[in-house]
Length: 293
Figure 1 (cartoon, one colour):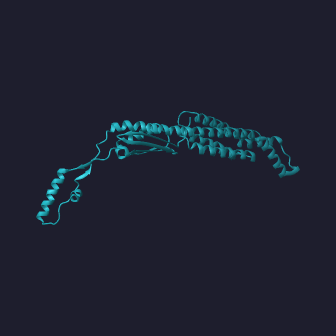
Figure 2: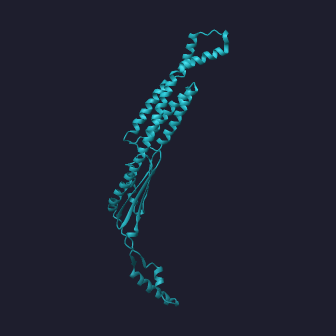
Figure 3: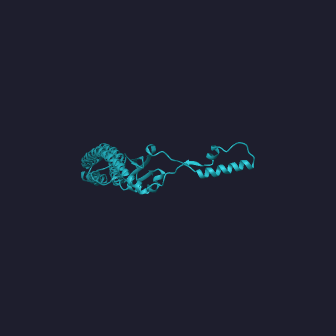
């Protein structure tokens, strides 16, 4: 089953009285790139998270966010350093007396000197945090994969229709090319007759030889057979359970070369028109394949 490279997933849980939310989205990219945006508290786990995502996804740019909602966490405790406040108050009063300064030492003076502050949260237990974060990342990535697979099914139906159209066009090109020698002989005979008129003696055998040489140079049988093989290979790839995006890219390049060669050898308007239709379908196939993991 093919998968798209675009998708989104999320998961939420709780840790230390906080809501933890993990969101992950991916977009098209030729290679795999994982960008993790984590709170500072999760910094030691960034590489673990990146590897966890990379192990599940083959291609695409993947952005992952981890957010903490502290609304449910405990209120921050206030820390008062009473010993420091007493020492500072005594020192300020002594200074005031020695310098004969007016006014009294107030609480504002002590607050500016840092006797009151917020009690720091204890260092987090990384193993406990990891035990909560890893399942959330896994759940978010699996939701992303499910969306990519759903888009992949839609892509698969579209690709299947375009492969069928290309196979039909390739068959019509083969039928048109089969009549090329006779068409070239008729064209050559007519042209020579126009140039020489009734007085020109035409050797049917020589004409047939010349037409055969021209037909050999314009022969596209090998290109038709190879394109048929590439189309069958493309269909096998999109039915594979493995990521096939890069292999499809290479196969499309080969298919493009075969169709371009057909166009360069085309000797009549009908054949040229069919080749142009094939190029149009091939371009649509290439656009869709750019979305495949």
